[in-house]
Image 1 (cartoon, rainbow, N blue to C red):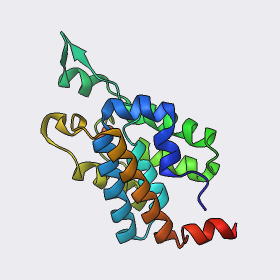
Image 2: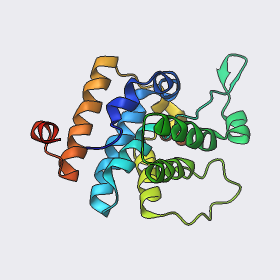
Image 3: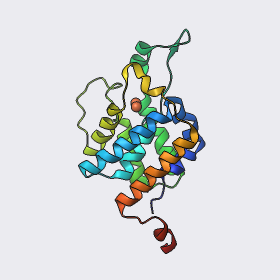
Image 4: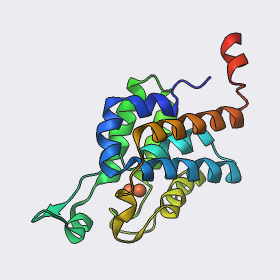
Length: 180
Ligand SMILES: [Fe+2]
Ligand SMILES: [Fe+2]
């Protein structure tokens, strides 16, 4: 069994507050993309899915006169830094292994170049996977942050992805639980 599931993360009030801000539909889509890409590239599917799900947990909305101001956002945004820290704290609080929590936080920190002064970061494959997963779900003008999903559907999608992760890791679901 994993120490922390996506459902544990989804149900936590910190996630409900901050991931909701940048959109659960986007977070879940990126978690699924990250899972599949991780499988394809032979990296940890659990960490990839968690980092994908939490990658935008550090988001702010930048408004000027009641409207999203993209220039202001580009100039001042540090959401990967805030997100890495916030996700790390949440994972540790829920009982995640500290090495895995750090790896997840670093994948969140490097999920985009948008906040960095240069584009010359050397990423690990896992970090690339999370970046690609995010780019796969991106829509023009940040529209991906405004797609909606109702809470029950979101919950069911998270449960299904948890089962896919368990299957990929060789955990057998019910029998596994009884055996422990
Ligand atoms: Fe982001
Ligand atoms: Fe994103």
